[in-house]
Length: 225
Image (tube, rainbow, N blue to C red; front, top):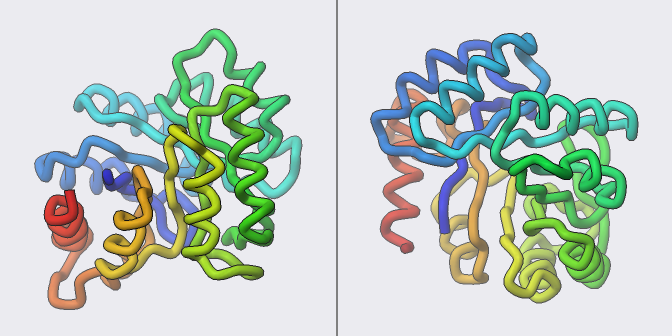
């Protein structure tokens, strides 16, 4: 299982994202993401370029609340271009937009709503979405398991893992401690995103600063793998 470090707090890219990126790259983090809200487009472009120039994989997670805004986010991801696009649910519209690019797409399974995003839906619905998304050509799914409002988060993870087959399962949102990472690892999750917990210093109470917090999370991942 790998860790995707999100340069985000409360579903927004942090204003000092470029400084934070420079500070964390020496830790060896090679999967780094952001949202398309919180900073100006020019900053996003520079951020994406610096992530990729460091040999890391860049991720843009969509948090748009309307279909039109979602498609605008997809367009932003293609123009940058990021390596991986997370979020959105309209696979039949989004995949053709990404055609011809090298961007891997991971839609949301279930029924995301609001901002910060919550996830509605039952396990059987998540499994159905995962199966359908893979059949349509997605690379996997982005599951907001710990934002669930209708079901147990781990039941959704199990359902997604079953529905995806060999597809990649990314679990995102409200992951805040080592115990969650251990459970997700044991259920066959391929990657997790963490942002807010590190910026809020909630992941490792004895460590101060986002760099030390990220280091603690990477230590947990290394011990699991």
